[in-house]
Length: 357
Ligand SMILES: [Mn+2]
Image (cartoon, rainbow, N blue to C red; front, side, top):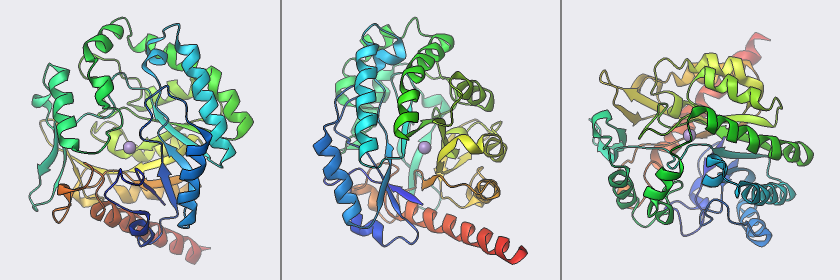
């Protein structure tokens, strides 16, 4: 079990808080001030890893090393940015990093229409209202950045959002096929390095799992994932399987995906979502009964494959007033409850297996 942490002075939660959550052994980290394409200095990597280890955690997983838009668009400058990416992979390997999470979504990372939608129990959570997806993406960016307050928002960097018109223009000729070709080009260059230095790449699916603003989205269903894994058929070309990102499309059979892709999943993001009849969805507690993701069945599927990768509670609701100071989706309480709920299920599965053998 791991926990995503945004670093000193960039997170309302401290490593000392996280130490008190039973079962959490690793910190999922990044250099969050780095824009895609910037060099990661070895000194910075070293001090972050040392800080995490000084509190008794492993620092095996980095989320994310972001991919520069020029690589996704396929511009001539992509080779330079791929060189920088490879440099970062090599440096992270030197400090023991085992898995790098990234995504290949054009322009935006995850998208929501509401960061603090109130739920019936008085808590609040990230929400996606289909009809509220405005036609002007600038409006969306402004809303997200406002909701983020003082924190950095991965994928929503103000520097990039300031150039949205240019970005959308650059993506005009990029359809699903072009984006897939550009992903293949990227993978063909980085995966041999990953094999050499033993770092597994784990692509994060698109969130939500459908196209928005007319932009292509290529990692959002079982068929997409099969296609992706075949682009470069190596165990180092793998997945972050995020139940919260794939879950809003109820056609995505999550346990079936785990059974199909078990040996290529290096990082499991577990989050529950409640999908409404009109297609809106809300993030909810990890408890299976609270939403459409059967977290027990998901964990059982991993357990059947003796999953040795990393797991983390993905987003959580904001509880007990913490939304005043926490990052959207990344409060302490609901993720801690989620981690504990999952640890409980895993312990039960372990015990049952021991009893049966
Ligand atoms: Mn996720």
